[in-house]
Amino acid sequence: MIDLLAQLNVVDAWNEISWEDAIPFMLTIIGLYWVKVKIDTSVGLGRKKRNQLKQVIVESITESGLADKNS
Image (cartoon, rainbow, N blue to C red; front, side, top):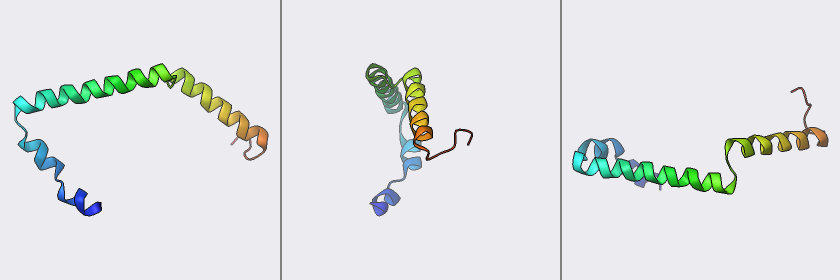
């Protein structure tokens, strides 16, 4: 696997791409990211839910005695 990654030269590939191919490629990447954000939001992985989950995990660890609340 590492040999395959060593053979792929991403910088050369990026430098060789034409404008006609680069614009749809970037639009595709942006579109895929937008879909990822929509899926994360619909599943409830937004910032507020993430902070609530983090607080629950910290409280659980603190109550179990594995960590000190002040550390």
